[in-house]
Image 1 (cartoon, rainbow, N blue to C red):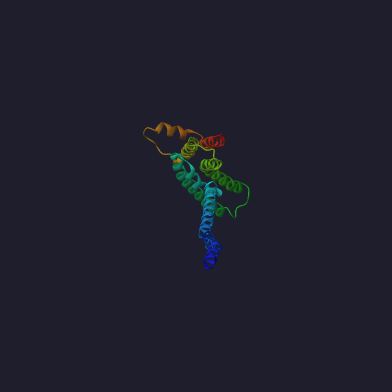
Image 2: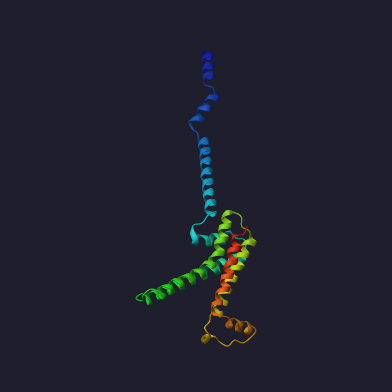
Length: 220
């Protein structure tokens, strides 16, 4: 009878039941699985957020690093640095000039002085805007995922061409009393530019600015 009782106890306390009970009491594997799943979900969410940040930019200042980072054209990368620096320098120069002009004409009556102020500000914007346009166009195209290295390089070349056109405009608009005698290979070209009317100095920058707009709006 003692043997029968022992067998009954052995049958009632089965080893598999003990193992199952222990596993339920110490859920280490399940906790690790849930932790791993949670960590994976968090990392995926962070990766998605990072990708979202890389695919967007905020404002004009955010467009510069975004376009520089996204473009595969070394020509455009160089223009993003040069054009950004020139745009900042021109903006500061015209800003200080406007402050000086406003201070000098603060007590003057309206009319011609008001027109001079407005025209001065307009000239500053027409110089800065084409310098920024290639960078903004490229940033917008890359954000939409439709830009190419050829498109970026074309905008960069036009940006450099606009910088050159500003130099040509400066030569054309030089007053006669400030013109210097030029010698060398480019002397005939400079003399020709000196001979043009001063208002003709507006033509090269405006022509290149129109080309930038047309190239920027075409399909990549």
